[in-house]
Image (tube, rainbow, N blue to C red):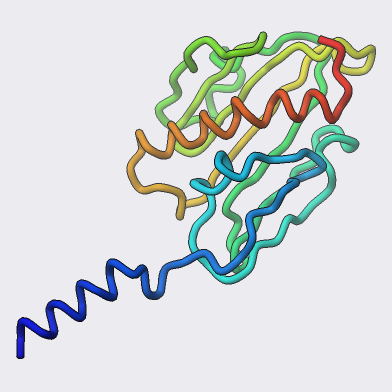
Length: 172
């Protein structure tokens, strides 16, 4: 009898009972199209997803979030800047826990990553925005393994930043 209970318990764990995504992954967040494959690992299991806040494309410095069951899973913001701000500089160090410089990006710019956040500074080339500073913060329910979470955040931002620059119509 005990073996049957163990088998049923294992079957429930394997089937993912009680921990699934019952919502569709948003195709756009904060005025920017997002990649399904890149966003999915940052979102926890739950029943409903909601994108809240203003478009970060049209509102400089505004914050937009993706909530799952009223839990803030992802926060995004873009600041338009007159010059390059180094994510590894002293001024921004307070934003990070265990800050590390990101490997060379596949686009022009520089990035830094903490245990739950990323900051990327990249050229934009517009009169009102010579550079963009793009921020990502993930919630406590993101992957528990720090290396996995960092990898997931990096994949998302490498996909998201060029999409954001296109949505803003950056020339650089």
